[in-house]
Image 1 (tube, rainbow, N blue to C red):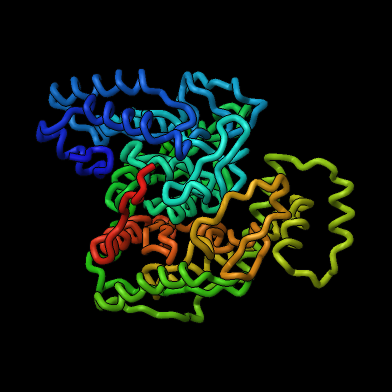
Image 2 (cartoon, rainbow, N blue to C red; image 1 turned 45 degrees about the vertical axis):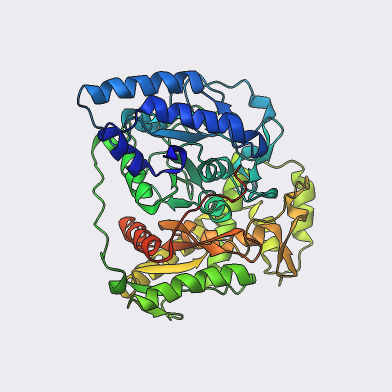
Length: 486
């Protein structure tokens, strides 16, 4: 059987039945990486010797009668997570020799669940791009078309899954960094509710692994099936044992419904600040059609939906002010002059981003208060709907664009150009209020590229969009491997 493309659930069942061992699965995954990854460059830090040792340990544990959730399953880990003994650079050359001494909390949870870590996957510089390339490890290509991006910043993980390099991966998401690569590469990902999964050990070097609770950013699972997302989220969910974990345990509510026809869904395919490409619109409509055919209540408009333009503005303000705080920009005086030269009536997202680079703490507090108003609006909406279906980005994977100044890049949406970072508005729709969102495959573009959509759910009701993803996978299909291989 083609073990390297089977789901984690299928591989676990095969190992329980004695049909295959973890050593065999691990060797098969390593062989595929060594054969195919030169064309894609997804695995930037292999850890094959320790993976084989972990696989042997997993087989011995199973022989003793153990059966942990991920026992013996080959997985990969985004480069930005600390793995003891391996470099964590975030693609920054100054830290190419930064080697943490302990595992990130999520890596420790993977290992405790029995997973076999094959190695680390590539990321963009500082995790701050919608593509995956850096001067240490090079560029990760899209498995469907190597001249196009795999997405970012979890682009290495998405490409690895599409190529059969392990059954699962863990990534992170601040600006669609789980969902966009899944959309571009044709796999699944889940951005959990803000705060659901501990993030310690996922900080830019040389920061120590402290149990902080970052704003906007989350860590989450990636997989080739929707059910595997749930399997991995159950391993990842829970507070940091150094802080909130001393007093609290996680018990997520069950999915609101078990039948596709029982769901109440709001479908969106238009945004006031950026066009939606025809291929993405077709993917959204394919999902909407499947829901309607199954008897679900499908609506296209609701007065309860928070204002999308204001939501995008708030998201950019919170995102950019936070990014500048973590990675300070040079030449503040030139920046102040540029901002002072903006027309007072300029409300473009480019202008929003520039002004946010100079945010004071008071400015941030005001934006945060407006965010709370939006969160309350989402609570009201989810009293009437169970999920929102919408794009992740306006286009399928785009050609590599390594212009050194991302602010000067442009994104082409069916012949109309927009500022490069404007395409983040759909990802920000869930990120700004901290909502869970599941990325699912929804078809192919006319060029044969994967197209995904996201299912946004109520806060801390992650099982609702995940269950909806499972039901849609059964209805419209899900992952399939790239025709040309990797």
